[in-house]
Length: 162
Ligand code: PNS
Image 1: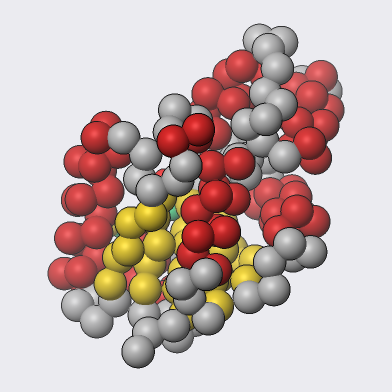
Image 2 (image 1 turned 90 degrees about the vertical axis):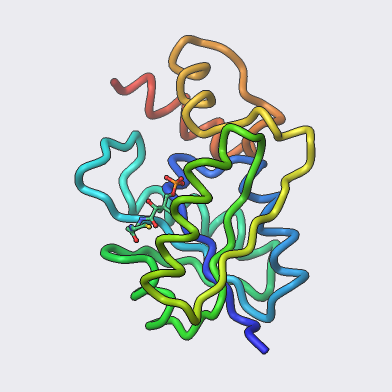
């Protein structure tokens, strides 16, 4: 039985929706490796190291069976390297389906032994995304309740220093 899972993403920044998915996954798998994609092509607000630091601070005290890591290259290669048999993805609304469906099937073609599992976050977070959180913060709106307080602080610090 596969009990190690990778939960990959950009996490720019971590939101309460991600935490909801992590919470659910840690109850299903022995170990969940939450891993930030290091993508030089995608412009990010927070550097990989900043994202990892935020995630370590928030997630490590709260969940016992997780690892925080980063990766580059193919996700399936990384999952194999971490001895994970499962990829976890959060799926919010129908709009996510097309992209997730493509990725899951492509990953299956590349690595038939690795399964993708979709988790539905609480409906409270069904409209939440890192992109909107960044946009709202940049325009002076409040994101409390959508991201952990530390992320809110870091967003304000980051956007003020711009
Ligand atoms: O949080 P995101 O940006 O939706 O996460 C996307 C992610 C990191 C899961 C995806 O871009 C990814 O897996 N990238 C690694 C490169 C890869 O394996 N590409 C082929 C996917 S079929």
